Image (tube, rainbow, N blue to C red; front, side, top):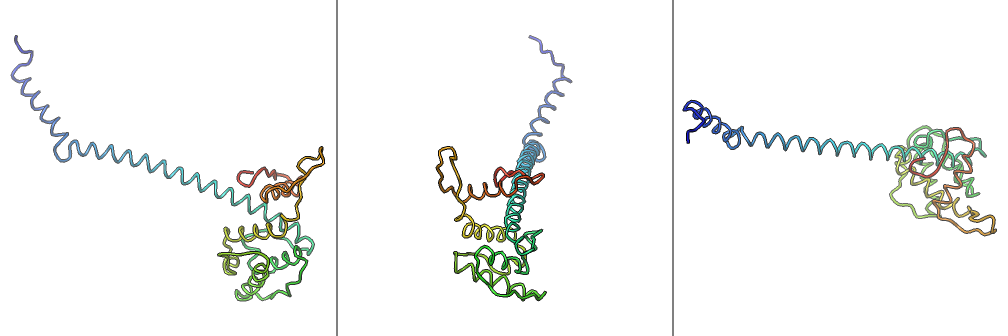
Length: 214
């Protein structure tokens, strides 16, 4: 049987075959191709991780915003009695004055006149007075006056939530089945949710369904 390859074609084939082998096994050949595929896979994975991290960050920021808005309205529902108002929860508590007033109103106790000085030491003094009072009512952990003065979002939200649990939730009794004239205590979270829904009813653009996505 005669081969279809001429001598010249055969040499070209052998040469090509050697080049193909070289492209696989020689430095800069197959190893480079494999590395390129590995790099592409890693880039894809990094892209997915980056997307998920950004998504998680966005959800956390949304939740933070909702909690901040809810707790601000809760505070203002009491501070209005003293003709005070919180506009930014993370900065307006820094001097400790509104925090002291809130505690006086919801506890019906006198905490003493706040220091109206503008210096940091005066602000810390006021916040420490608030925290000292709270320590007699609840257990506080990992919250210092400096955290409030410096506007730490997570710890400020935690502080307000602790105050709500101690002074507000205990007084909220919710009708579960009005038709049967029966009622029961709901969880603190459910009680606060219903309270917030009632307090914010009629506010344009405010429709609180939960504490994560409303």
